[in-house]
Image (cartoon, rainbow, N blue to C red):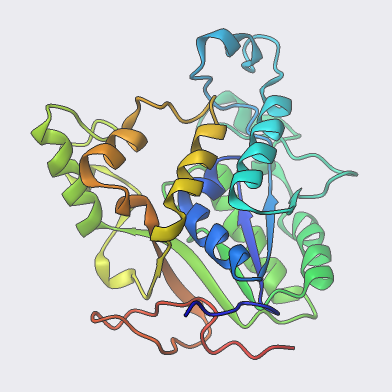
Length: 289
């Protein structure tokens, strides 16, 4: 029998549209289906992202600079697939933080990019969401933003700062993680068919790969993989159907996207545990209030 998550409130803080689906799509769908209130805050509209659809290349920041608006619509479609109705942009509608681009690039220096935002000032916009939604659980990135993107790092900083200064105290905070063992298996499978995963020869080439010891929690979202993949397809400018994400699914199996891994950084690990001692439920130990 599936557990009911009525009364559970989960806040996710992400940098750009599509980050939420890649990292947490199955988790979001699972908890929403169980009755939890899932709130997504996206910090930028991803204006500096690549455009993988040739017919939409004119949207790029180097051309008409309309990618951000398009990605808003992609996000809305993805959230519909995941069953999420509460999704917002940080500071909206009064403030708009622009995508900062990759570390060391020219956009980093623009005054309106997220990377240049004052931490405390930006965190106050997230505090407003926390005080409104009163989440017991928050999910965001680790201190290097998973792989070093400035907006991911900034999202981590602002999420953690907001959790510190808000009157409402979040009971459990998780950081996304991806264990090396899983990625190593994926790379091996890709090599078998003469392909690669983001050009990686080994798992050590992937900056977002973490030692397995960092995994405290594993959410089994296998029943929601189809929703996650549909949401990934909704982010058409960012995720190619013949790219590494879907190739990994085809060659390692859909479970690669059904299992989502986390590091618990605030709160206590609680039963139930799997055979490796990892939590299997983000909401375990939560006191409803």
